[in-house]
Image (spheres, rainbow, N blue to C red):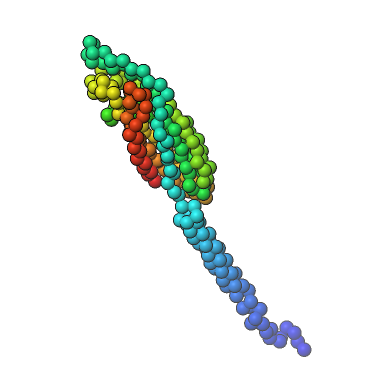
Length: 214
């Protein structure tokens, strides 16, 4: 038999085989992409569910205990323009509760005293952290700046009548971190109005108002 003259038959399967391989690879890539996308979507949904349920940020709760006086000294000068010389230090004892399942980091904050809307004393509150589901006590002493009331005729009249109305305000601001990468800002306020009886050196009529802003 003459091999050179005999026709050479080509196996069709050997020609189609290499051509079908890229199709199978493309199909596998699509399946891998779909599976990867499904896993990512499931993780994102799980994070959203946790953020809206278990780790949903809650308002910090500020509680102010009865305000007390550390010291009080005053004198009235009717001959030199109805002046009042007042030296008073107010002790504000409060607590901040963090009801979240994560820590609450608060920045440098402050507590202040006001008389008829005018700032008469202020003290800083250093930055810190409150662990999850914990309550942190804070004690601050605010001294009235004597020069702020020196020439205030209203203060003279109030002290002369035996009572001095004041307002103590505390502002705590910070952030709650959810799942270590979602940060939510929180600001908590507490304002307490009270009256100092300058004759008995006591505090009366204390009423407090609490607010939180997410």
